[in-house]
Length: 411
Ligand code: SF4
Ligand code: SF4
Image (cartoon, rainbow, N blue to C red; front, top):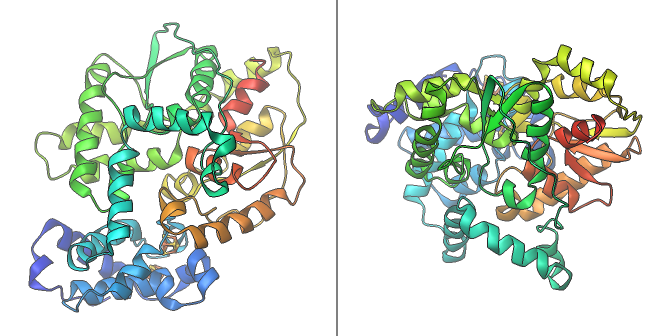
């Protein structure tokens, strides 16, 4: 696509990035058909091609308006359009730039500003979120339905395995997951321990930065990335062979560290190394299938439970991990039920379910209808946000697939 960016952005890193992305788009519209918001709203401007066009106009000097902001806000950043695009348009990077520009030019109403500020400052701080979440769990029976749906009931805790092995990998604890679902990392550590891999949650690491990035605080997201790299680096120098992430939304963001910090001479090389070392737990287990099959053969636990797997957008479109988790669950004896429209977002999408509740709930209803069609005994996913969002809409238990595998191994 021919572009002629305006002076305010042309010779900046963001401008050069935006121009390169815009030039790749041939305006074919293939992406529109797989965009969840276009499917719901039927408006070209609520699909990727229309949003790209809006951003192009704005970056070429047209006024940014509340309408531009609305259409960009409605985007889930699910990246289904990237999977479909034949030209390799990196839409998520363009929309990050577009949102930052529009947010610097269009003032949001006070209520929106406060909500976004609260989410940006509250969610990434585990020491704030944890006690508040536990308080919410305690008073859960008394909470209004909308709030109750966001607070998962307290989990029975699973013992963490901390045996040492010659093979060691770092594991991201993250910000909200340790409070909402502490068993996920514990289950991952137990499975990996059986496979001869020790896991380390490094002191000082925290939120991956995705929350701040999605709320247009790019500098805050870079600061989160630098803090994590500082926490992980001594372990990497001592031979940690990977950085495991059990929430695919966080994993897709950590995979971007090299890109986020490429302009920072002090961190660019380290960030590139962390990007190379980052692994979704599904990728780690898929690389250990021979060992896993041996463990499964020895395991007393036999299961033919029917499970519906919801592959988060961050897993299938962001990290492009497709089919690996399904293969692991089938190897462990689970019967996977067919799920229609598996490429579509469930509506969780980071803070989207809070900022765009009406669209989010429509997407969740559609997703749960597809997941429930095969009458599964359980639903599995790979991202804490999707798990909590789906669980709020169904009595069928929803958990991380690594917890099912952990149970399948007899834990
Ligand atoms: S499919 Fe790719 S090239 Fe075609 S309109 Fe969408 S983003 Fe542009
Ligand atoms: S990221 Fe998802 S919601 Fe946004 S334009 Fe692409 S397909 Fe549509």
